[in-house]
Image 1: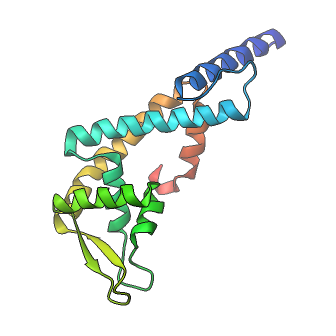
Image 2: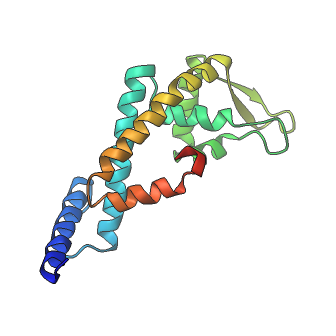
Length: 178
């Protein structure tokens, strides 16, 4: 590759990074890509993936990404020490405020997907379990979620400005999941 070709390639990558930054909300365009542009690219990747998964889960299972995440987190609870999550721990796990998580859990409870009960050790605490219907929906929706995630990553990986981020995400997956 000649020096001129490398310079043109770098210019194309910088232009693509600026375009991705412009696609992300609140990301100003800058003459040189830097930390802000990297953050904007990451934000754009997250938004693209989440939107793709959201559409697939809504269409196939009448389930949002956040609802899927709550069901998934709560399905991993166990009866051993530290095996049940309090509402603030669920909120931290799904990156929502505690009040938003409580409203979401209430909606899922009304649909019969979750149930709440008092903590046996501390009557002030409330635990939430996934019901059999919630587990069945989670099992049914997981292939849709995972397929949509793979599709979104493949699509994003074709964009030069997002490809390094996609590679980084894929590297985080355990070898069996790749």
